[in-house]
Image (cartoon, rainbow, N blue to C red; front, side, top):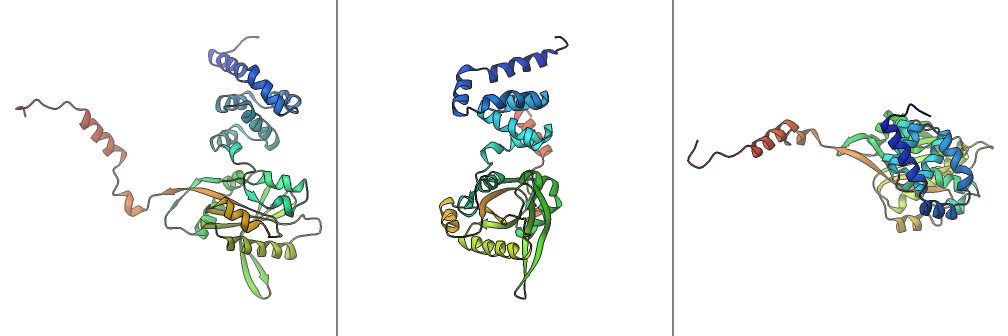
Length: 289
């Protein structure tokens, strides 16, 4: 074989060194016997550029295995893979606190658990304080492609502030989705504050309403996702313990930009560079001007 550039040869050597460390390999295979049958196809079926991203960004074979599997299953482009690596998806996937094991049958409960993350990272939009839940909803729908990418494969957007009429009263769901793999509606409620147990009770009410008014015979039970800016995990577990509708609670992170009235009070990049140049200039000896 020929035609390899020096850079590509270095990547080939790095590939070999990453995957062929006997100590790491034996430990990983011992922990996951099914890995040996999956490993070669996963490496062979994704482009070399994807492989380079994975073995240069991951710190272990187990971590690399996660991204290899996800790349094959989700059909990620190289750019999407890079975003998921940067956001450390392997640390967030399936980590939402839920009651799925009690409210959904297997294997639906496991699939639903893996469909949720904690935390969600909405770094594709910047918010200027003060802002409320409606502001976040609007920005998420304006950036719906990036929002769906962060939610994960299978989420289809139905609507924002989705109207339901119950007993002559009007109710509005923050965000409504349908998950084509789980075959169920997903109600997402946004709270721009810390979790309190009352939020779970209201979401439980909304799930009952969607099951009664929207769910078809071939749909599975509606799932709820409550997104808060902060939460106490023990408090969430207590709040979900006796609710009979499947739901999960996760945090979400935003990029908060400075208000306009403060931006002018901060130095510009040019001003900072000028100050640094002045500090580096030699001072004139005493007595000279």
